[in-house]
Length: 493
Image 1: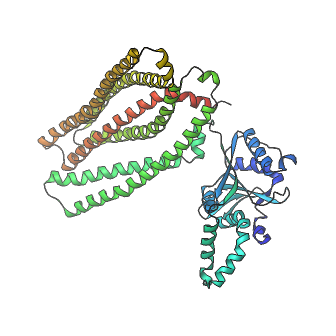
Image 2 (image 1 turned 180 degrees about the vertical axis):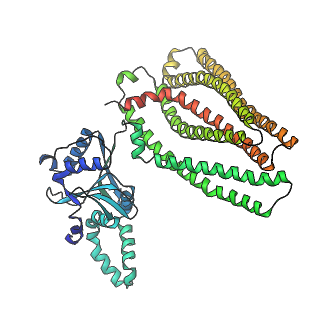
Image 3 (image 1 turned 90 degrees about the vertical axis):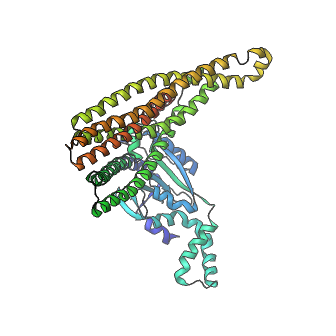
């Protein structure tokens, strides 16, 4: 066993320096920005593994962090190391206070991980070395018999290691290995810092850049095909260029979709952690006056907030980029600046209708919450109603709630139809009118007409996304009235 432990002598920490390990690991990973100093654990705190775990959690709380115990299956040890840290890895075996038994993992990786050594230096270590240190004590008991079995089975020497690995994975698949403690920010910490440590900004910048590339490729395709249409003949070279542009949008769209999904997952994790933390921090006085129906509504709207924030936020932001780009295109081609002014006026018309949609949505949401709360409370008190209330009056209030809800739903759907059908498609007609005069008077080149047509269609698509994103954001604002207090409670000390 010593042969396996010797490479770790220079990178593993003794338990007596656990406070120093946590302090430097938190600073080097930028979880804390201010100078911190933790005392070393006392001998009583190192009496057992359970006592060490309690000390780690308390020490992390003293510097504004959380220490989450982590364990993993034998077959998933590599995934734990790939996911990275900051992570305090605990080597298996009896905990000796003076012997190296802890590893400070700063950053994971596919082949190498970044380790903070006891001399406060960063080192890149192969994943296999750390994995062997974590798994060797469990493999040692069966490795001897396993090697003998492979020799008797006449397994070729070059196949010996893969066969041993496959059998060990099968035999120890259900074994759980204590990984140590994961250091992370408290869910009540500033959201921007949480986004930074969760790696949100990188995928976000990539999505925006690739989406701009995707828009430019679409504009280029419209320029190429429109040029041939307005000139009355087609050159095979331009046709080939159009095909290349169309196919180039496919990998870009795939990468955008994958990156957006990854970004949604990371943001969703932060949202759920903060929501749960805020729920646990609520004072009894804040929830004592609320009924079961209101709690149910808050749960339903918390799910809606996550979905609407991600979908509506992306859609609204990207639609603004598209509208800005479409206005630049329309102002510099066949229709001139007046064409871009028409687009701006139409956006103002949409904004007025959106404001009406927002006002009715708030009234509709209040009616929906009242109806949900009334239904749940009556279901809970069903036996009391059977015994005390006149059966002829059981459904009087329900009919009133439903009638009001249906009227408001009809008004809301009517404005939604105006946004999704009349307003968006109305712009297409107005946009095409800006191209007709230059086309009839032959005052614009075929290339300019082609780009103008692409700009009109591009603006139509952007207006559709704008209305969809606004509807999502309206739902987010309304749901936030219920969920917002939970986020505020999460920031309490």
